[in-house]
Amino acid sequence: MDSLLQPMTLILLYFIHALIVIVLSRLLKRIVDQNHHGVMTWIAIVSCFLPLIGELFGVISWLLAKRWVSDKMLVDYGEYVTFDVLNLESLRHEAATSLDLVPLTEALNDHEHTTRKDLIVRLINSNITNQGKYLNLGLNNSDSETVHYAAATMNILLDRYEKELQKAKDLYRLHDESSFLKVVDVYERYLKSGLLEDSSLRNVQKEYAILLENETKSPTNDKQRYLYLGDLYLEMGYEEKAIETYTYITEAFRNEPDGYLKLIEYYYGKRSWTMIRPLLNAIEKYVPESKIPDKQHFVLKQLGGNEE
Image (cartoon, rainbow, N blue to C red; front, side, top):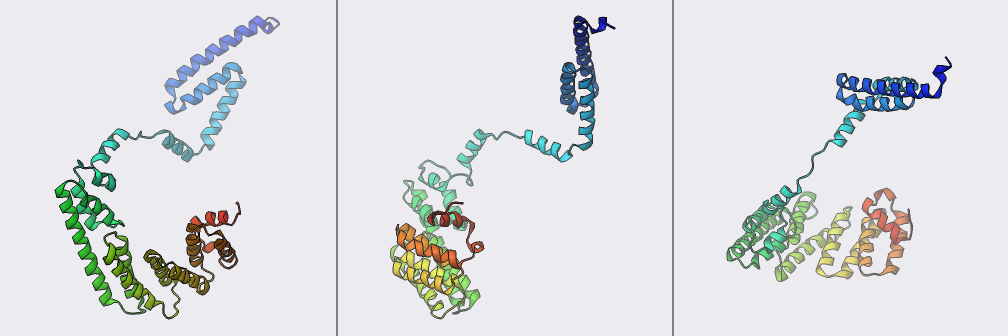
């Protein structure tokens, strides 16, 4: 017994035990599922440093893990470590030729781009705003065929808007909600299309302004009518009328944020800080926080000098 407790004997037994553990772990790896190889390696390492205790602790831990581990966790982990690398080179080549990926401005400015005409024609059925901006790029292109396509497309779109607007105006009835929404939709899209310039733009704006002014001559519970009118006044350069309209919204719809936010945006652009402070106080006093759009919360807090 004393000989077994000698240091050299203990060291020898320690190394023999470690060798047996290593051999057994390699044999077991050939038998058990590959998914458990990592666990077997961990148990072998612990057992080498802590004979008997390591084996016992490792086996108990393994059994508990098999009983309680979440399958969802393993699936999620598998999805996390398994991914496909994005082939950026193929994406670059696709972007150079795809009509859906090529930026319009870049393609129309590129005198050698082969998709210019296709992109221009696509604008006929496109819902993007400022179509006129891109068509003007085509009109200024050095390629005569591109200029022709751009001019033809612009005429088609102008004609389409005019017919759509005329139809909406024919169906429009004062204070009729359904017909009002239809005609407003056409006016808004037409004015934002970028197709109108100079006198034609001014004429359509004046028509639209008259319609909105008639709609708001008598008080209405629809603040959107006033918002359309205020925005239109700004686009036309009638700043005082726009301010009067937005101010009316704050008075008629005191618990709604729209009028206050429009005035704050206007005065912020003018760097008129003394006009912003009363508006911040009013919106804090009268408007429930839940009604303020999320994207405006941070701006209002910063303007008011508050930090979250």
